[in-house]
Structure formats: C-alpha cells, structure tokens
Picture (cartoon, rainbow, N blue to C red):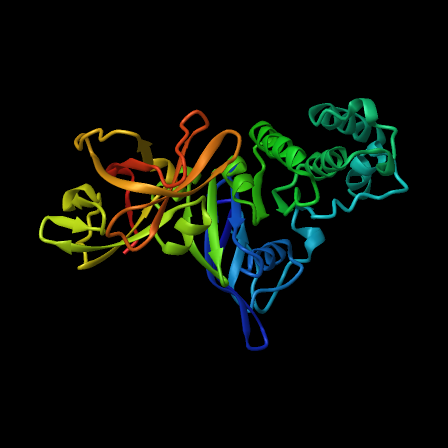
Length: 356
C-alpha cells in the first residue's frame, strides 16, 4: 500500500489558484522533493500535507486513510508527522538534549526511554558531545542537525522539510545535503522535501516533482529529469541548457549552422515541421581541429564570442555561421580557447532532447 497519496489536490485563495490538480503518490520510505521557483505552490502543498490548511478540492491520504479533504481535516498533532522549518524552530532556553527529547515528553514516553532514544539519535547526527549546549552556542549546521534529530526521534510516519538549508552558507548546504540523504537511507522515513535549489533536490531525492505556477510539470528520478525533460520549463529549470529551433526536412533536421539525421532525435512521436530541442552545454565539445562526423556526433565550425573561467571548468559561448543563436558549451579547465578564436564544435546527438 502507498504511504502518502495526494489526489487531485487544489488550493485557492479567492480568485488565485496556488495549487491546481496536484497528484502524487509516495511509497513507504521514499523521499520526494517538490522543486520550483518562489510562488509555484510547493510550500502550500506541504502545509496541506501537514494539516495547517485544508485543500479546496481533492484528498490527502496516509496509509489508505483520508486525512484531508474540503469537508474534514485531521489536526496536525494527530497526523504522526514531523516538520522541519526554514528557521529550525528550536527553543533557545533548552539544551540540545532537551530540544530533541521534547517531542517524546509530549508523547508521555518514559524518562529512561527518552534518554536512550535522545542519546542514540544525537550520536547518529554527530551531536552527542554537544548535548548540554544551548542553541546560541551552536553553528547554523549544528542547529540544523538538532532540528533533524528532534524530527526523527519521534519516529514519524511522514517527515516534512520546508527549505531547511536556505539559511546556511554554500559549504554547509553542500554538507547537509549529503547528511539528510545519509539519515534518510538509515531511517527510511517517507519524506517530502520542499526546495527551490535544484542541487539539493538532485542529491537528496529518489524522485523530484517540478512545479510551475501551481501545477506539476514532471515527476521523475533526478537523472531522468535532467536527461529527458518533458517540457521547456523543466529543461530550463533543471540545470543549464541551449534551446535550439530547427526545421524537419525529410530525413534531416536543420538547426541553422548544423543539421542532424531525423532518426538521431530519439523520440517515438512524429516530429513536427518546427522542432525545438534541448542541448546541454556538456554535450557540446570544443576542438581546435575538425574531428569529422560519425558515431552519433555532428560537427560544425564556429567562433568563440565570450567566455568565463569558473575554476573547475570554462563556460564558452560560440556562434555558428547561419545559426540564430549563440550556443553555450562547457570545457575542462585546461581546454583554453581565446575570444574570437575559430573552433570546431562536436555535438553528441544522443544527448539531444526533443521538447516539441
């Protein structure tokens, strides 16, 4: 049986529709992220799951039982869920151990059992040595670990996280992404994770639901979202890409500056005359000499228009004669091309994704 199911869930505020016809099923122990820009409806969806607001239409189920509908809603405290907020919401007047054990006290767990479970979870989140400290004596990353421990120690049926890493600096965010995934792999708690950061979603999630203007654009595994996006929004929001328009002429698709065989665009659907494809920058390789076509690749000559050195790699922008736009390509740090230098581009046609 599915653990958490949202069926045709919508939420309106007056004439504004924040979430429209949202459908999602989570299996036991699955971590699914709701990913999208600000205002897309992801936090509203999370708040409906938590019970802070009821859906205008549709239902939310846990273990086959309806917990939210337009006519009835189980109170948040009876849903057996834990939620981690953006601000952590840990109490400044309590020590680390007291913060973590508070939920167990509310549930009237025996003191000896509380101590055992608190000590165990603090070791799991690497905070055992800091159990007597107060929040003001902790770093942001340590406070986040306390919030995670407090949410997990009560063994919730569903764990909800609302942009939990947005207050951390870049290095701490990267560390905590892997920490959240490690804890999920260990405890296997069904989890809904809200974020606008695609890197967080890619690292932590089993599946990602990409949202836009209240609707779900695509739900898929991270590699599938990146490698085979189904809409222009998903292709542009997940990573960087080039959108290139072409015309289908018989067995060839001409993109202006380069062309590919029709069969190279791996799609079961029939191609329209006007085609739009997504080409990831890393699927375009820059070379000083013509490598020759073949092996699922096409080649064309262009000119470097501008570039940016980003330490681990170069970002190049290359214009092709006859092309309507500049193509963005990435190259290794040691692959240096000067601005205005002529270059050859080699496109891996197996990595082209047809958007329409």
